[in-house]
Image 1: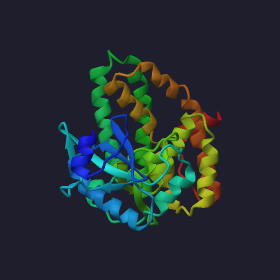
Image 2 (image 1 turned 45 degrees about the vertical axis):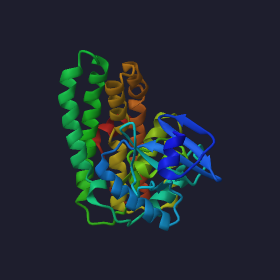
Image 3 (image 1 turned 90 degrees about the vertical axis):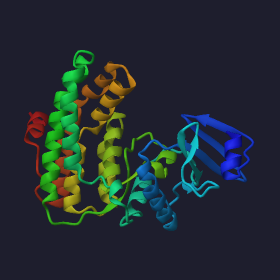
Image 4 (image 1 turned 180 degrees about the vertical axis):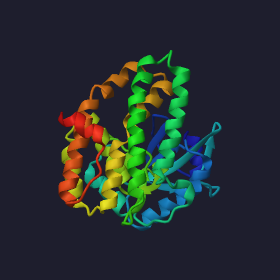
Length: 309
């Protein structure tokens, strides 16, 4: 790897750390990482432009470094890699203020359509169709997983209807740079990694952070309160926020990991066992938003009834 860095980047590190298929090193008091590019190659030029714009705004994202051939991608043994200079403490754990900073300071950055992810209803409908078709094929191998999947597909249907109704409103919504997925135990390395970026409603990241925090046993309700106390969120954004909390991405992510990475099916119990508790959390958030906005916040009736009966 030293020869690769020397030839393609004119960098000469003394030591290189290999972790999770990434190569970390320091050179001339700067930190770098050579990371595999696992997204479609068509994304890379768009991500590079976004990276440059965020750096102009003095957001401490990792800076993508072109190689000596003036290319973003470097191939090593037929694997695409991207070199980045790291500008933060990569091991520090993220918090809510970190998320708000990057989302609020990247509003109105122009992106090509290929990075857009804000048509949630269409994306979720497509995913539901995929899961419903796949369940028939894997039900014998993963009976418990497929049994639970029906509940979460139903919850996703509620989320789809909810965001469709919210999208019909005439109100302000802000689009910013977000992440494919943010988790409560992510580090600043993940937060500021441009290879993870997409273009979406600014509330996306905090919703995923809240859901992950809940299933990590943290006080997710306190995070919700803190977020709304420190950010101006329009009524329409609040409804989209609630709709995304409804959507069980936490289950579908684990489902994919179990099926594609052959993880233990028993892991799904860690989520399923908290389903009633999460329904109560959703009911309480509905009440919180109703009081905060002093306006009607649409309810999912069966969640309200099951939580307070």
